[in-house]
Amino acid sequence: MRHRLVSMIVPLMAVVLLSTSLVACGSAEGPPEIEYGRDLCEQCGMIIDDPGLAAAYRDAEGVEHLFDEVGGMLVTADMLGHLDTGEFWVHDYGTEEAVSGPAAFFVHGAEVPTPMDFRIVAFAEAGAAEAFARLNGGIQHSWDQLVAMAKAHEIVPNPDIGDDAHHHGG
Image (cartoon, rainbow, N blue to C red; front, side, top):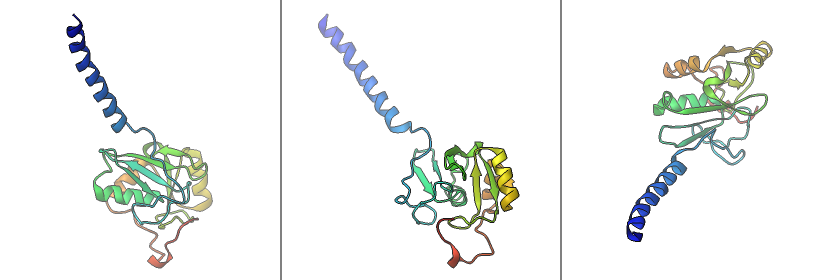
């Protein structure tokens, strides 16, 4: 009887341990954590130091990709073929809180510099994006519009600024 009980419990324990380790390895939730002033932008290689402009995504394999601005994230995700399969987060320009990319509201082309001058800023609330666009210019876009623009290679740094002018901070 005891042998039969052990022979049933051991395989059951193995299944529980295996499923627990799989869940622990592959179930990252929420936005990737960015260590400001330390982590580097995958697109440009500069230090990510502005929480109001930062963006990140996790690809289908669970690999995290960190960026100093939304435009760099979109361009890189398009280049890597991740735009349709990744989980994306952007940071609200005003509150610096992480927001799901598809749920955010964006202003593109505003008169506010961004690290690589893609000039895309994100907001958690539509009203904040509208107010920002009124004060700073730019065109409001949804996530789907920006993704379509990235796929069409229409997300580019501000054409009025040469490569020497790319900078960090706002």
